[in-house]
Image 1 (cartoon, helix red, strand yellow):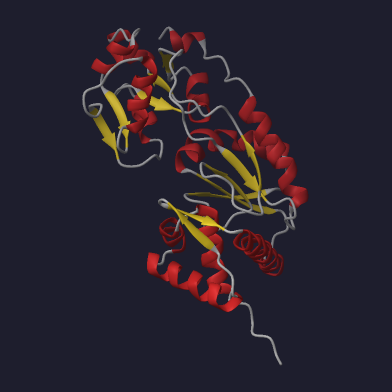
Image 2 (cartoon, one colour):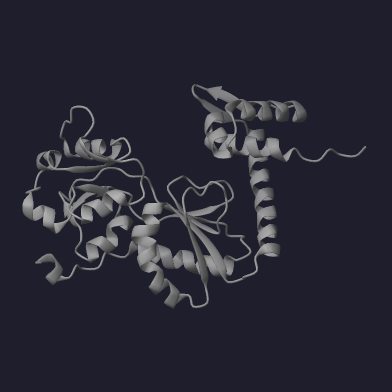
Length: 300
């Protein structure tokens, strides 16, 4: 009797749910409803005759069978993806790099000249946004790596406060209390600033007040460079602004815990000979100390 083809759609839903430990998070990643994930998992359980998840509070804990299936699907999907790229990619020297918008603008873009000199003939396609769709050869991301990928943490993810020299000439910001009274540049819901003031031992009533930005594209740091207020930044995003003397640390001993910054790739990628040296190069440059700012710029 002929075997039925593998239920790839259901396996894709199961792998995402296994990775996230959540049907809801898997639904968001795949662009479907929570019900669609639940039904796909239920059909898969009926087909194989094994339980795939147990509910543990708000989390869905995968069984051993579920982990085996998820690993197998991730490997198979990777094989198909690499085969498609191999037959459709007209340029063997091209790589797609995906990174969050802020890191792409503030850290990767200033490295492009040096990167090009170090890797002559390499053609890069730099994309911004979420790497969860898999459309990349190398990703810099804040999310934990998926099954089937190698990953390296780039830097200490601590968030520190920064302001322009011009703002610091106008406002003494030597204490956390002074920072609280300064114009703050706040991303999203202000949780990062709440954590920073918590690390400083300063009690803040309600949410920190200031100019808010609905995303994390680097606009808050650019506003800080222009003297509009104090912003929080990770070590990579502020590196070149520090080196140019456009930003100065504020209360540098205080740091909030940030999200780890990962560089993610497949070691069995068809272009591993291009990717792995680039991974090493980026890791080295992530670990470098920021260049010293020009004295003339600091005293201007």
